[in-house]
View (tube, protein in one colour):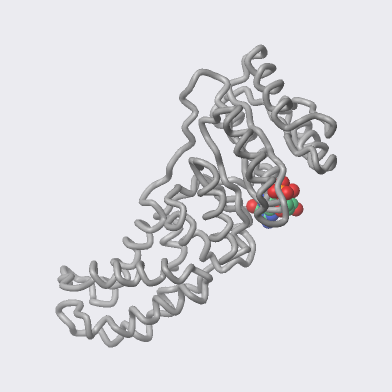
Length: 296
Ligand code: GDP
């Protein structure tokens, strides 16, 4: 996570003491510190630039009111702008459709897709009392199908068996048919990832998307991958009409920059964050709370 930004700013905002308003010249050092902190946290450069410009605009002429000191006022501005950058509020899943609501999971191998399928199934089952069906369309790695089956069994969630001799689209259609017949509320579809963006993978998931017409298409990305997370997000966002992002491994020692960049780069909301390997390690993403965590 970003080093505690408030602490980092404490040195430079001392200069603001006694100032009645925030001006271009008196916030210069503080702004530079914000830019440096974000760059060090792996936030994409265009995002850093735009963010700094927004903080500046919001801060200028900001009258220091009440018993706030100018430093606190500046931090308040940074907090509001961070929250805005990450999307203001939590965007919940939209499952309002004729059941089964299909959730298509996309992302690179190792991002945490399969784990997230299990976590999401558990969350929707436990908190929303939904009847869930899990299916894997990853025909390239038998272990991937097995991993989802094991998770489903552990969690007591229905699993639609598939095997590597089938085509992903056929698996998807059969699972959809099964879910309809057995009155599942939600069908969660795990897909094959690759180690890097590749055309065949994109074509396959685009086809799956066209076949399934999911109400939610979630892009799962490892927060630890920093700048790469942003590039991958952009590529998936161009290939698929994503409805949301899941940032995994937010419990790791990632510098947190991905949380700030991906929303801005894709225009899609971060809906959930992964905070542990365990099945209950999925949380709704709240921009305001994340901003507070960054500011410390
Ligand atoms: P997939 O290839 O995208 O399906 O990725 P997996 O679901 O197999 O996950 C890859 C690895 O990341 C596994 O060891 C998971 O336990 C781990 N993992 C996934 N999500 C999280 C998370 O939020 N936090 C932590 N610490 N590990 C995670």
